[in-house]
Amino acid sequence: MGKYASDGLLPSHAMNIPTPTATGITEVDVYALGNYNFGMKEEMLDQDGMNDDRFERLKEEYAATGTRRTVQAVIVVEEHGLPHFLLLQQNPNFFKLPGGQLLPHEDEIAGLKRILTQTLSVPGNIKHDWEIEPTAVATWWRPTFSNNMFPYMPAHVKHAKERRQIFLVRLPQGGQQFAIPRNFKLVAAPIFEVHNNPDGYGPIISSLPTQLSRFSFTIRSK
Image (tube, rainbow, N blue to C red):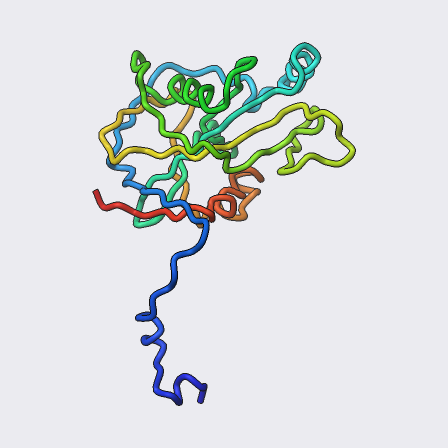
């Protein structure tokens, strides 16, 4: 018989022992997906989704303006008592985070707010208030004109072709209205399904559960 059982300490006893608060954890309130309204709007041009010529266009941009800067948003909602990521699905095998390319000299936070308004806001709602965590969740680098991106700059690369930064967006308690472009489907992907699943969601999205472990998500019932 184990030490604790012989001392009369049953496993249920451990559940009554409080766990000290973790150090360096940021609290984030998460609300139910049903608290928000989602409609449809006109299709949105997605030049860099799955187009064959996207790397030729990247070469032209790189020659003219240098490293492309892109930003994406992690939006977390609750379903079935668990955190889910809001993703845009373009076909059965392609998922992406809401985001896009920054304008020259545009600040990352300001640029992401602009892109989210263009992508997810109801047409005409130019005052959508996005609350974005100022510190990036992750930074990824594209060292060559190819699909490969890395969460670090390879030592042999002197100048990246693209830098992609990902930020966490806090949603309010509810009542907001969103509009999804018709050429995309909004998907709420459970965190356990996304975790370590690059075949299903790609390396960037599948790494989000690990990168977001410094946040403590509190499910709010209302």
